[in-house]
Length: 184
Image (cartoon, rainbow, N blue to C red):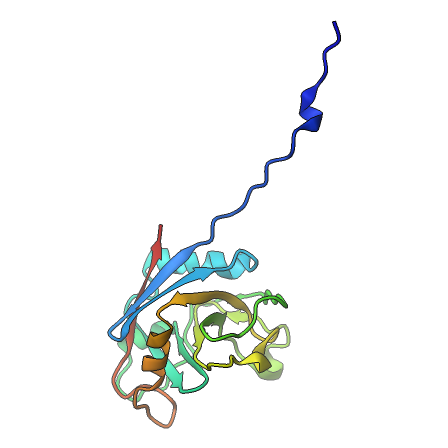
């Protein structure tokens, strides 16, 4: 009797990671989105911060119609009206994860970062992010800032937030608070 090892004919199982989903709650409505598996450092960091409640009570502190809305600065939780924001974070950065397939289209979720010669590696902020509001996208930022997710439902909420009255620093005159939760 001859035994044949059939395992050599078996196809290897493909392990496909399930995309993480999230929802950003605001007074202007909810934005539902997904995180990209192609940017694992950014995805895992965002998940860790969301699970810890880090973003709850933070503000969209910089809004520019036709461009983007930005949030994630922990200093915004206790900021006084008119206070400059945008420098706070968890005390670390994330290495850039550029991917030519992940573009700054409307609804793209991307990591904010310090610009210029002080950040030649283009490392991302540990917590601050922005969501593209521009209808045609902001493709001048492609492969310059890490895109790590996208809003899939609630794109109109981005535009509502971008349209609020703001001061000369693009901070909304009335705070736009958020909470972010993962969706199972």
